[in-house]
Image (cartoon, rainbow, N blue to C red; front, side, top):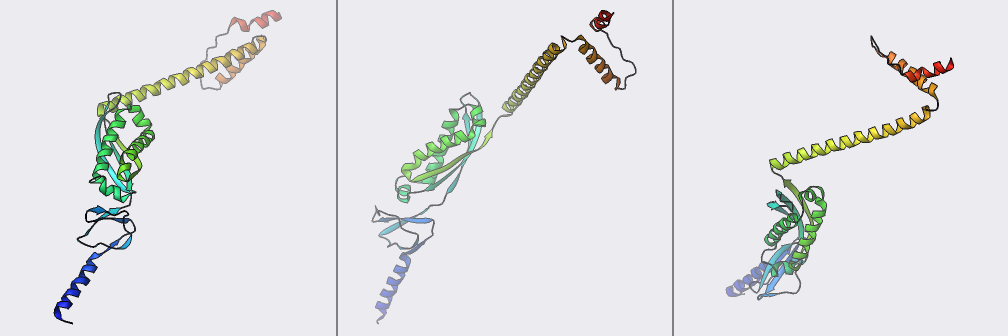
Length: 248
């Protein structure tokens, strides 16, 4: 074999070797042949990309964790807060992720920020603090609908942190303290009411038996005598003497 043929076949072999691409299990290759998109993405495993006729774009199908930076938001009740979140999404249609949007990661990030501001701005601060799971589901649903044309599936959204101003924290602390005091007073009043009901029932039981009142009084004296008191004064109601006077 002459030298030119050796060079030719060597070039062919090197070209074929350069056309071999290996895609991992989590990767797909979107192929453009002469500028036109092939119907199905290739991979995983060994594929052939005939350059310069074909051009390959590698797409990862793994879940992407997107950190949404803190957003300055004014809630429905005019409270200024900073809210950060995290978004989990993955590519489910490789062709759309390449053709329908220029940079699907950047587009999803921007869409997440605007959706977070929009949803939180439509709710009050109490909803943001107490119903966070409900807001997470709402943001996830909106994001999933918006990114569906790009071949993106948003699987989960979590509001990560809510930063409040110091003045608002102090006001909420005062509100919580006032709420605790209110509950304590309500519980105390309820206890007094229930005790009054029981005393009224006891009075109805003792009323037809005057001697029972005297026995109860003497029992109270015995209980007081067990204490270490040096001097004890006992007021004696006239009603306690009536049984003795009537007995005479």
